[in-house]
Length: 198
Image 1 (cartoon, rainbow, N blue to C red):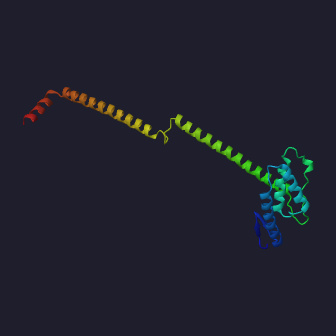
Image 2 (cartoon, helix red, strand yellow; image 1 turned 135 degrees about the vertical axis):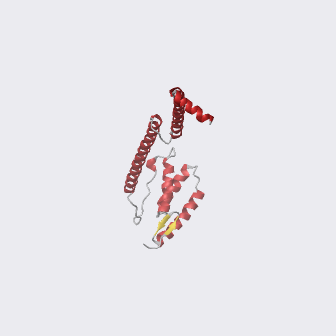
Image 3 (cartoon, one colour; image 1 turned 90 degrees about the vertical axis):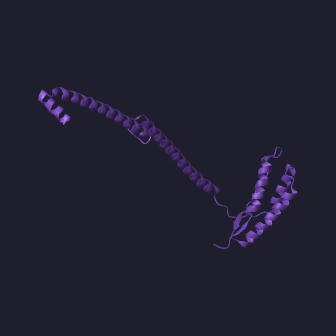
């Protein structure tokens, strides 16, 4: 592709067309500075004079003419049928705007579908996470959330069991000592006493 020349946001590959666009941009600034937009009758005359003189032949000029035309269509007292349409030069290439609109509508639909799917997926994920927390909170199983409490309860239970066992062992020892004392016959008692004296 050749050299691209940008004028007022429009890109041109033809140098003569770019030069004409610059001239039209200056013309638009000149007309805009001298036109009182608060007077629809004046705008109407300027619009039709510009059309009659065929001053604008590039997108820059057409855009300004369209701006004036749209303004006139909103003014009371000016009948839409009195506003002449903008004649387009034969050498101006205009893309099919309906095709462009269709392309953008399809793209917008695709993006909206992606957004809907994303919202549904995020909602499902949030519900799943809430269910997991609910199940975790209500289950008796040890989890990261109730681990410390379960561990403390288990240690307290072990400590209680140990204390009970220790108490039972002491009681058993005391009973065995008492039985030991009562089970000795007289000979054994004398022998023990003799050993204790010697």
